[in-house]
Length: 448
Image 1 (cartoon, rainbow, N blue to C red):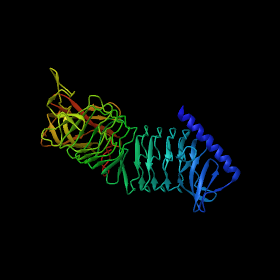
Image 2: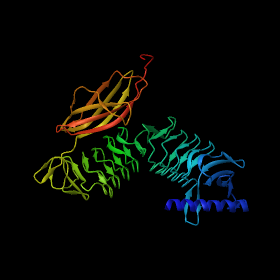
Image 3: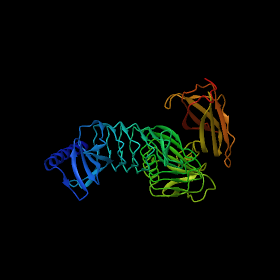
Image 4: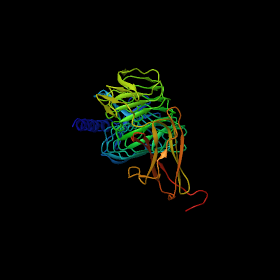
């Protein structure tokens, strides 16, 4: 109700503003900037160029003009509301807008430009835009995909945060600063994971090129059920996994040296964090708001941890018994902290070939690991079928990892297949990794 009242107030204010502007014409704000109204838009002019500051139309499919009164439209901007004492993006709270086409004259999409456009399902960003600023598409809960053109050189913080239906961010391959893989946004070198789409679900394996998980990269991704962090990652950013309520456990590899504040804040389903390596530096509230029985398990010989509490969280050596832990086997009045499956997965890859997909994975260490199974599906969220006849035997140990390879044959070229990797420990407990996708293809004209 409050949102409706606020939306009504803003629309009423906009109508009054338009009437006012239509009566007095152009209001001169300075020698080089003035504001005016043109159709469904309120705009400002500076040095002969136009910035859209407010939209007052009915919604639906919106095509922003490339020129107004002969001047190019170069920015989707914001206006200052002196009554409420804040600033609002040009389309902020325009919940009835369903699609937006931005003209090729625009170079900047300003702060909060489409903030809370909850009805927006698609947006066309032209290859002229260089900057997508903070909160530009925040809370666009119906937006399912977005394509970043080659021209973009800056993407602001939380630009696509809380887009709960967003499953794919695609970056033009010619972009020199950003890239994408499986719908996830990275920097060009894929060393920084910038944004995991809020509408994706299931497990996710971070590529082993990544060294940093960015600020709020997975924030609010409630559909994320598991994440594999490779041994290449050294830092986990502020609020990186905040609000990932579907996570139940997380493994921190020995490469991680810094976990910034609120990294796993309010992950209400998270009951266990496994640390392999010495204690990293951690910020405030890293695991605050997790499950009431949350605890930390770390490998024997690691330095920097303390028992029974570490930085305010219950902690113990993996495999030891302690009254404060809750995982696995209960004997008398104590509980044993045996991890579900204690392997440190470095990478998991799927390489397509002619009617085949070559699956490879490697580990940094394996504790009580029995082996692996591989599963295939024809849809990402569909039913997965085991493809190996017998358990792929473990070859690693607690101090040494191993590399594995399996070739899935008899596939159809041009069809996309999805794969999951399961590791099973000696107690029969298993953990799933993936999914990954691959599309077999014709190579040098061979095959059908």
